[in-house]
Amino acid sequence: MAVTRQDRPSGWYLAPALTFFGAFAVLPMVLVVYLSFTSWDGFGTPELSGVGNWERLMDDGRAWDSLWLTLVFMVLTWLVQTPIALLIGVWAAGRQRNRAVLSSLFFLPLLLSTAAIALLWAAVLDPNFGVTQRLPFLGDFNFLGNTELVVYTVVWVISWQYVPFHTLLYQAAARQVPQSLYEAATLDGAGRYRQFFTITLPLVKYTIITSTVLMLVGSVTTFDTILILTGGGPGTATRILPLHMYITGFSGYEFGYASAVAVLLLLLGAGLSLAVTQATGFRKMQSQQEGM
Amino acid sequence: MSDRAPLGGNSGTDGRSGAVDVRTAEAPPSPIAPVPEVPERQRRRVWKRRRGTGRPNVLAGVLATIWLIVVAVPLYFLVSASFRTRADYLSDNPLAPPPEPTLENYATVLTGDFPTYLLNTLIVTIATIAIVVALTVPAAYAVARNAGRIVQRGFSLMLVGLAIPAQAAIIPVYLMITQLRLYDTLLAIILPTAAFAMPVALLVMTNSLRDIPRELYEAQTLDGAGPFKALRHLVLPLAKPAITTVAVFTSLTAWNGFLFPLVLTQSVDTRVLTLGLWDYQGQFGTNVPALLAAVTLSVIPIFVLYLFGRRYLLSGLTAGAGK
Image (cartoon, rainbow over all chains, first blue to last red):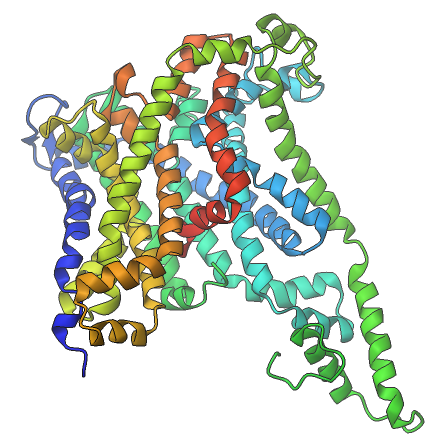
């Protein structure tokens, strides 16, 4: 007996999920574009105002500063996190007992929520009562109050939070590399560092891509950490794009204009993940998930 | 490598024998050594190689130790400071063990609104899991077993959702929630949180259902089962690991959620843990030990999950990387 159409689930099985997702995720995407052409204070009804918000966005130096800061921030978090996560991940992939014990400690920050991590670091770095203030050398720095330093402080806290996650990805990927390759290379006289660059690195490259996409999109949308840690300050020193949108909308009650910023954010986030996956081959990434 | 013929007697892992094989295949036959000695030489090589890679990797060890300090010191500070009195906290060396450990901070937190926050977070988390699992299991079943154009288009649409940042949606979501008169309710948090967790959940679930052999579905059909029966008796039992992964992933998303609660609720009665912690920062002011006690308490549920279900936790954590 052949399997007929009626024996297969109909499209209705997908309908509830699709409707739900459509209502609370797709519809907002359409609405945010519409709202970017309105003026709305958050209480009454949004009223169409033409391209006013967009013209304003073009001239808004602060928005472009935020965008620039977002990009700087994106690059910095990638530069800090990738080498650390890659090295520790490959190291933690070893089956030695000490590595297993240590890596279970490395993963502990994963258990803390973003809010918890931001509050912990706010306490550690507090310019008056923080831990660093009472330590030699570190006490000379005002990590949260110095407009130059604060960007690096935020990059540090974000990295502290997310390095364990990316370590986990690299650990899983490195464990998929056949041990025989290393053994063959050792017999051929390749040293450890050469093995890392000629075997490990090429074989975890799809994980590097996955991890990069997640890091880039993640840093574009970093919000809670910065809001809690610095509130975007001092001044506007850490006001990246999502924060600029939030402050404009929910503190300044200019939701129409904030929607224009949100559209920019949407383009940036979706554009980034599309660009990276297109450039590197999304299909390949899906078919070679390297143990994920 | 593993498809090479393994050498007899040297079968620790198929990989290792493959490696030896490569070497001996390339080595020119020695004119002096008699043939029976070859296995002996192989053994010696293997032994040498083992010693070679067994040499401690100093650079990696140093890096790992530094990172250990980086991770452990703040966490140690978090826990030890939560047992200090306020006076101690301000006067002591912050990294010394508390001179007179106290539970006062925990008492302060637990007698306040913390239980409300915890309960709200639990409600939000459980409801979000329920919605996501209930909707994505049948959806994934349809995607895996129905190649029709509409279903596959719908699936693609949801995958696009992987690239949508929630921040970009927050203003319209706020508008919709106020229009639906759900502002400042737990449902206001649950609905968008579930929607944004759905693409990853659907992807994980679909990948798992695609791994169910076709024969099993066909056997169900031969037994006269319709799609709904197959869903109940075949898909649900076999999808259990995927459901667990999705449930863990969703619960972490809901547990850590900050933006939706921040924008969509305001009163103490609907405050979730993450917002509650932030509120403590202002409320406790310089009473940092109490704040840190609250932070420590908020970690305990996930920590318990880590202790008893590490595998599930890690699979849920990395589910999002399946993108």
